[in-house]
Length: 405
Image 1 (cartoon, helix red, strand yellow):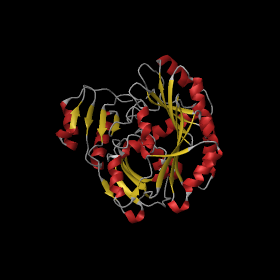
Image 2 (cartoon, one colour):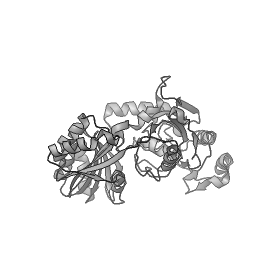
Image 3 (tube, rainbow, N blue to C red):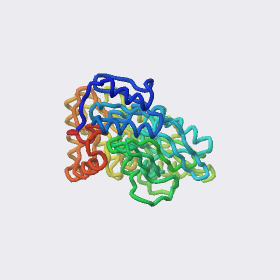
Image 4 (cartoon, one colour):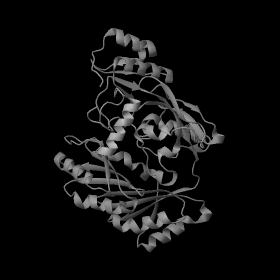
């Protein structure tokens, strides 16, 4: 367990000597923020923290800092200065980027060569690479390109004792050693500090078109969703938005106009007695709006063939709450709940009682009390064993995943 300290001068002087005094800020008697410039400085800071048993949390733009809840650490490790695209061998469709790089800036750099990281995380304009990877965030593009774990091919890590390690590589076909990249993706900074990430890239879509289909209930869209998923349409994304006012299915295609896939899609829609309308790309950024300050936001996974039924059930079962859902056809749902705190707390308990769903609390609204995760005992034991191997003193990401940490 880490210890709380008031910051004596000899400790702050040692830390300042690693990064320069202008890159260290004392936030309170027990917490400070330090901004290293490279992996070597991150290593020095973690070695110092390990020696003095001080807890550490990485910090990028702060867009997902509350995910996993956790406790205030002794040291916030700001990665804001690690903000460069280090390498982009565009011929190989790969890149290496520092963890503090802004996600939108990364995509803009890659776009100069007609490429991108095929991922649409939350808060793209503010989020950093390290935060996105640590939170394992993904959006509607996952339908076409797979999850973040499929796109990360390598990374540079600093372990809790300051050891610098590298996992994976810089090429897509890499089978050497354990795939630590998949383990670190989604670890919320509790196993190591990610300082660099190697991504597999894809060519930017050239013929994207966006459509929407409206219906009073999600169940009326289930047949169309199933038909699209089983078809040969070049579908980039399928996203369902639901509230008390109705449901809307967003469809993103990427096919050459001569393929006339929009006409095939229109025929499929008419077969379900629904109407297809073309729209702009703005609908794909609506997930951000779920995170209003007063909202409790959940991420719920459910079997893909039950998504539409689950979305309807949310509206029917929690009539005392205002429920907004943005669900992906592959089974991942972001749900914002508004209402009385005790009713929301009970709703989370009831949702977690369903064996077919997994519920993570991404944001707690005022007065709502619920742990970020509810992990079954066998899985929890395995996670704790992995945590102990990487961070035996429980210094990284205190309180995340394990409330007793």
